Amino acid sequence: MINLFRKARQRLLTKNSFLRYALYISGEVLLVIVGILIALGINNRSEAKKNERKITAILKQMHQELAEDINNSSGLIEYYSKKDSMINLVLSGTLTKEDYLSPQGAGLFTIIASANDLVTFTNGYNSLMRNVDNLPSKYEPLINGLNTVYVSDRLQLIDMNQRMADAATKTLNKWSETYTWYSSYFLGSIPDEAIDFILNDPFYKNDVLTYQILGMQNHLPAIKKYRIDAIESYKAISEVLELKNSELTNTASFILNNDELALLAGDYEIAGGLKIMITVEGNMISGQAAGQEIVFELFPLSKTKFFANNVSLLVEFNFGEDGKTKSLTTYQGARRNVFLKIE
Image 1 (tube, rainbow, N blue to C red):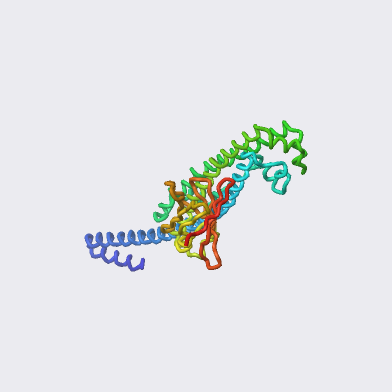
Image 2 (cartoon, helix red, strand yellow):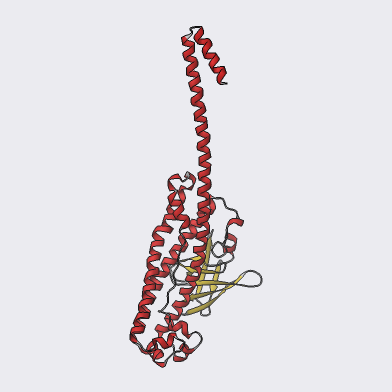
């Protein structure tokens, strides 16, 4: 081909046809430019596809990490429900020496001397941020939600994790520096002096109340918010990547379809006439006590258990052998109530 172009130029020069030669040269240059542009276009498309594959892999990693975070938060929400129940028993003043000597007594005694963290995964998010300038436009709508989860929600969570750890450490330090029974208790025995302290010391109840405020009014809401926003980002990634059901790993605890939610709708009543109305609209479920204006949105911990975001409340739906809901159980503070479904 090069020899053909060379011979054509030589013929035009021999004939002294400068104008034709100039046109020919222009055409040859144009062909070269077009060839370069085509090559660049092919290369750019190849790089774009390569970049999209890379971002897709990162999003799939984030998808898995979010599922882990969400599932880990389930245990902490239930942990706080049980701890809140025990704290309310302590504050009520109804516990006795026998309660603390029972198999459950260890949990009661160390109720303010322990703390659990929600530690989240950030590898996928960090990788995405390193490549955010090359983000394909179809993935851009994900960024605001992901920033909410990994920046504002996570920073709040880290702060509250530390506050709870500090509160538990402060309690342990105070006990070890003040009370001679400290070592005996943590070596496996419960001295009478320790039981007398937790039953009668007014400052102990002050510490329990402070711990409850930090845990139930600060740490738990931070965990709930992280979980709720993480689920929204999880769903958004699922949608934009068009993931099939087989690719949605570890979602049984927090993804319910509309048909599963519809089974829960109805009115539930407890002895004495108090009624709770459960309403399902699309993929949202909410509850409302009869005669009250407050509507509490419910979020799934599992296929049968839900938590309320704006109050300290767990709701568990109980199914019969026919696959239909027969009742629901509410857990709030130290109270447990069973509501039968009204057919």
